[in-house]
Length: 259
Image (cartoon, rainbow, N blue to C red; front, top):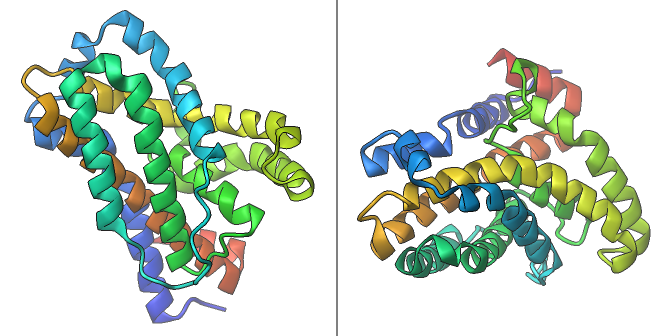
């Protein structure tokens, strides 16, 4: 069994989104200099605290009422409205500087998670299903490398393999206890694994905002690039999941890797 020409093209588009280019490259194009210059400007206190702030942001986003949208599969996602919301929060964060990260990041992450869920719905996902909710969280781990990654742990399917055990455990608990305090330990474990990768891209965003003269307008644009990156990851991810439901996991993976 092979993918139809139309589905083969969809998978090729998904791979293009998932594998190219990274957030750092997009930001570098905007600020006109290598992102490494921004890293050098980050105070150590900020660099060391980003991991904790990222975990907190993901936990707050996952606790929020993000899946209250009507479950209407294939309805077009509202990408522009979510971009606007994140741009506004980025503008506020850019105005107040790096000290506002702990306030700005949970807001922008919550908006992004809602946008990810919106994209999931547009690709035929059922938002009331546990697997869909966890797959939305999974998107934050895509397109960013962990500090402990080796060559075998890079790429879309490699990241999904790394996350598989944590996702399976979280899904099992949430299925019986819903997103409640009883299921919290498993969700914390999943969020910790996701946050390790998400924090890499948060650090890239913060480093760009540390560049002199970025300010409020620059913060808004960087946040727009930030959500644009994760909207791309979400679109690619949920196209792959849609095709997996149709053709099975193995055939989609083999076809993806052969592209």
